Structure formats: structure tokens, C-alpha cells
Length: 481
Image (cartoon, rainbow, N blue to C red; front, side, top):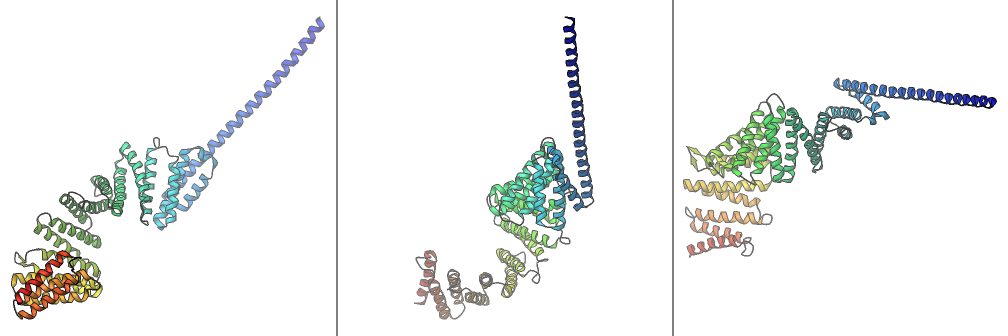
């Protein structure tokens, strides 16, 4: 019995010894595992810390315009497997990479860098937390929207503009939430620009109204010290947009608003610094004044139009821009011809005639026969108006000469309707001429001219014109009986 108990005790000790060895071994393994894990975590954190430092270095390089060196660091960092486990670090690297490509795009004007910047920013956006990283989220969206606006300059589709609008809309919500006024006016301006371009392509009021809304918001926050260029462009765009909107609603009100913004733009584009831009704004102002004159205060608005167009002629000379020079002279002639024959001692019709002759001089050298014919007809009409005031025979002769010259350019085979119109005018003028001399000859010429007009103004094709010409011919027949 004692021997049995002794044997049991030895076995027990052996078991405890074995158990203790196992526990000890496990403890050693646990310690080793903990040490390994701690070492791995420490190594990983050390690597992440190194990555952060490398990103900081890349930012410094970019700030010193060492773009190539910065890009090498970002490429190295983005090749690290660990970085994708940390969205904030990954997005910072992609944003930095995008900033590098953006800078290269600005300095080289190469589209390849624009597309690379866009790809980097869009990749960064997938990892940016819009709630925790509000400023970065807003900045990246502004950059993406701006790049799509630049990309749109080479295209004629709306897809890039819609992408830009989506990005700016996302940025706008954050700017409003954080009350970031500095970025708010930039975002408003860019949204206005995107909708402005859409409105020019699609001519839809919804785009015009959206563009006006955002650009008005942007202008209200600009100062002379900040964002001067954007303010200039915003005034110009608003001038155009209100003018375009006047075609659809509230014509007088919107034309007046368009004039207001164009006048703002004129102050921001002085002729000594921006001669062409100043002249173009003056042309736009002149168009608005002419359109407004058909609604209210004709004399004042036409006088304002004259001032604007004459100012534009200081830049657009016959030598520099013959087409635009001729166009402005033609418009000025039309304006002066709208006044009464004499106004405040000014012979408006004679001034109009001078501008028409100057237009004709340029058109004979540079333009089509069609344009020359238009001016010759206008000169004929003007001579008849002068005749009604002065009752001078030479004015009738002058009108006949202009109409006959126009007929040589507006032939019946190429311009049947216009040819017939001139023939009718010529017939009317020969009838007037008959009052002075050669009654029978001029009446005969009038009837011949009417007969030529009837070759086009048939009763089936142009019943009203046909009726008028036939009535004139019957009148001649009665008088000549």
C-alpha cells in the first residue's frame, strides 16, 4: 500500500512537471508572439510615420517649384501597400500628386497633365471623408470642377460642363456649411461660368437664369482687391446674359440690366490697358441701346448707341479690322437714318449717307456683292427720304442710280425676290422723276420696271406684292391714256 502511494506520487509529480513545461513553453511562445506583433506594429507605424514625412517633404518641394522631385516622392509613397489601409494618407498623397500635375498643366499648357491631375483628384475623392475632411473635400471638388471647365474649352459637348457643375455643387454645399466666404465667391463664379457656356450653346432660359443667379452672387462678394479678373469676366457675362434673357421676357428691364453690367465692365476694362476688350464692350452696349430705343426714349438711347459705336471705332479701324469697321459704319448709318431728317441743327440723313458710303468703300474691297447691294439699296432709300424733305431733282436721280447699281449685283437668277423688290422701288422712283421732266419716258421706264418685278411677284407666289405692283401699273396706264 505504501509502495502504491509512492508510485502515485511520482506520477503526479511527473504530470505536473510536464504541465509546467507546456505552460512555460506556451508563455515563451506568447511572449515571442507579443514581441513579434509589437515589433510588426512598431515597424508598420514607423513606416507610416516615414510616409507622412515623405508627403511633407513632397509638399515642400512643390512649394519650391521642384515638381519633378515632388512627383517622384508621391509615386514612391503610392507604391507602398500599407498606404491604402489609411484613407486619409492615401488621399493626401493623391491630392499632392494632383497638385503637381495641375502646376505642370499651368506651366506647360499640355492637356496630358490636365488629364493626369483630374485622375489623381478623382482618385483622392474616393478616400476623402466629406464630413471629417471638409476643407480637403471642398478643395478637391473645386479643382475637379475647374479642370473640367478647362477641358470644355476644346469641346462642343455639354458633358464636361455637367461634370464641372456636379463638382462645384458638391463644393458649394460644403462652403455654405462651413461659411467659407473666400471659396464661396469662387464657386459661385465658376458655376455661373459653366451655366453661361451652357446658355450660349443651348439658348435655354433655365441655363441663362442659373448663370445669372450664380454670377450675381459672385459679383456681390467681390472687392477690388481680390478676384479682380473674375469680377471683370462676371460683369461681361452678366451683360450678355441679361441681354439674351430680354429675348424671352421683360425686354426693357433685362436690356437695362444688361447695359448696367456692360457699363460696369467698361470701368474694369479701360481702353489704355484693354483696347480690344473695351471696344467689344462698347459694341455690346451699342446693340443694347439700339434694341432699347424700340421700346422707350428713342432719341436718348440712339444717342447713347452712337457714342458707344464711335468709341468702338477708335480701336476697330479700316486698316486693322475692315469687316468690323464696315459693320459699325453700317450700324451708325442705320441709326442716323432712324432720326428725323434734321434734329437740333444736325442733318442726320447726310451723316447717315456718309457712313453708308464709307461702308460701301470697305465692302467693295473686302466683301461680297450681296452686302454691296444692301448698302446701295439703303443709299437709294435714303436719297428718296432726302428728296421728300428738299424736293430736289438730283436726289431722285441719285436714288435711281443706286437702285440700278444694286440690280447689277442682285440679278434675277440668283436673287429673284430681292431683284423684284428693287425693281418695284425703281418703278416708284421713275414715277416721281416724271414730275420733273420727260414725263412719258420716265412713266414708260416705271412701267417696264414694274413688269420686270411681276416676273417674280406672281399672283400665286406673292399675292400681296403682285397686287401692289399691278395697282401701280394700272395707275400708269390710266394716266397715259
